[in-house]
Image (cartoon, rainbow, N blue to C red; front, side):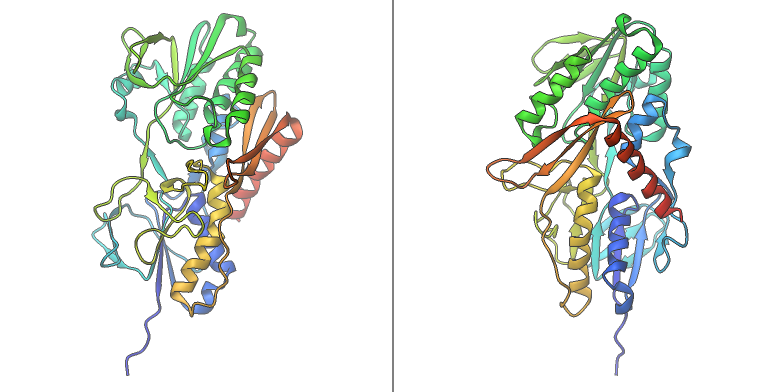
Length: 392
């Protein structure tokens, strides 16, 4: 008589989305099922997105906010430090750059995004020339701080290179924090700050009311906003951004949101992974996706923003779906409800907070709380609690 083999759950990605799923699997009883849980990521640490603008501002350094989960925090999980080369959803095999092939009964895609600077012509050359920086990874955010720290006068242009991108409030936060730094240095009057984006207004998925409020925040800080401006190239020699409408804009320092791409592909499929907006299940049996790599369409037809708040809220739903597959099907599964929130850093140690129901009809219902030190302090606590929990 053949003995039943323990079932294997593979989670690809050990950032916020992947770790949240691992924690939910344990809370919902995966140990009692005798399953093997494998967590795959090339990196041994990650940084929360909410910390990156603070690194750019100079309030954090990368080493201070790097999260390296401890063995105790990952007890009962087999961690593999490798890059995923391929996912075969038909044969249910994950292939690694080590040559190892792993079979799975359930697979969770939580690999996130990758910065794709080469997508916009001339942008890599501008970075190499030192006239363009970004703050979408810790080392780059530190370089952005150094560039702002040494800036004396001229025009700083904040540019959204393409959509979608992680953290829809980040470009606004970056511009406001740059203005805050220049005010602290006493040179704000010598610096022009403008923001350009392909979107009609910031945080498009939150709706035009929130967008108008954020434009007003920028205006109050003396920052210009220019929407529906799609960049097609950067000339580092003349320090100009070229746009699809034929116009160009000069800059002395370019701070950009990098083009993004999915961190991995599934079979022959290339692109953001479409999922059911309630269960986060993909088109492939036994495969779920959540967080930044997932493409979630809200009931109103808008894309769900790529932000950690949604990954954390999606994790319990994904974990329950996985346990139904590997267990006896009795796990209670709730639906992801599209609720979330996003901090908006203003400078002066004050933060706003956008929160609401992104699944509401006929349009998302999102409110923007008045910026305050109390919200900033809450953001600091959230940053610290995540670090302390995973490094316990």
